[in-house]
Length: 92
Image (cartoon, rainbow, N blue to C red; front, side):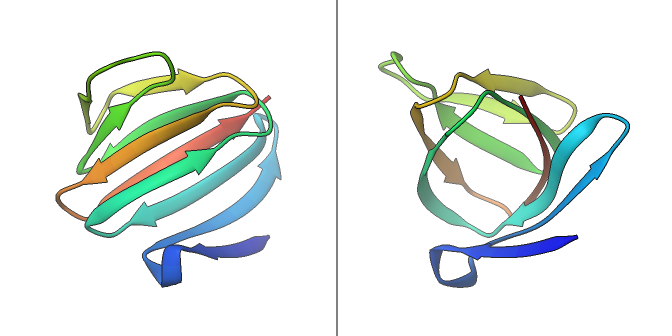
């Protein structure tokens, strides 16, 4: 397992591999962030809510617990977090 920390500790994740491929399980604290992708990502919101501005979009959209979104490789997306939120990210 790999432990990662971003944005001065406001985003933390644990990376691992299993039968579903490479995955990170993480938590984002309240704040605003911009993430870049190096490969395709599927983000599943586990608890809380992420407010996302996807590549090519002009507006933010809410993704509460139980929802998911995809981002292609070599893109960036903006995230607003209004409550501490847990997620799973699947790569590839």
